[in-house]
Image (cartoon, rainbow, N blue to C red; front, side, top):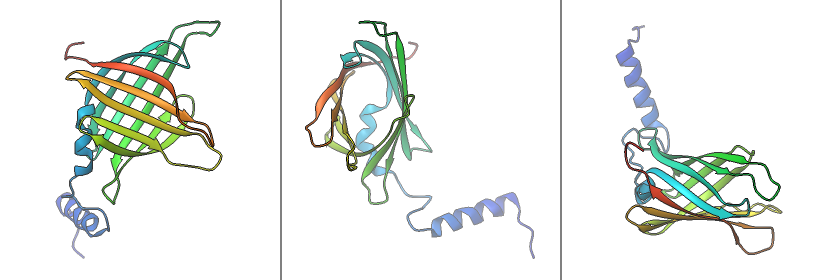
Length: 178
């Protein structure tokens, strides 16, 4: 038996992965390319059911460009008898094996949402939750409204009802050094 060196082990791993269905080291994540308009850090302010708030979102490539990671937070000041609060979330946007795009969302309140993602036109994407019996549906929309401006809406549809806007915000792209 020939001992494996670090170089031969890495080469063996690449060959093994290349032989697995749907996994190829040379595979390009082209399905994510239309979502590049989201990349960067965005400072946001908006309003909705939780009240007026402000926050930020960062969209960055991850896993050597195979996913887009969104890290986001919103802070809401005390108002109308409610204490100040902060919401944090993480979303992983990914290409599926069939070249469609999906996203998995997790937040500090314990929510998990699985989205199907559709690019409506350049600079506009809609994330729609997968339907589950007796569960609300969610729709997250991003729309470029200027070279450095991104508008967002988050809509909720209780079971058997139409979507209604829960949150609406406007984001400005942060420049380096902010």
